Length: 86
Image (cartoon, rainbow, N blue to C red):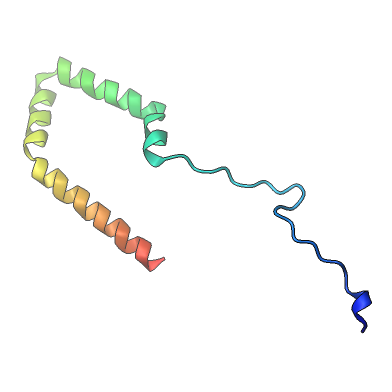
């Protein structure tokens, strides 16, 4: 087979009709744009103001900050471990 029968190849950046994925914005920014999050925060604040029992539960949860810190560090560590497996 001669070299003349080979098709001409052209390097292209994208194919016609191909839809490229949009660049992802920052995770923190997309979280704050979540309407459900703001509704949940407003509901939680209302419950804490209206019902004293929820205020006491919130105070106890805030006093146990070291538990939340431990859970957050564990969650970050697990994400790092799962990221290394991939």
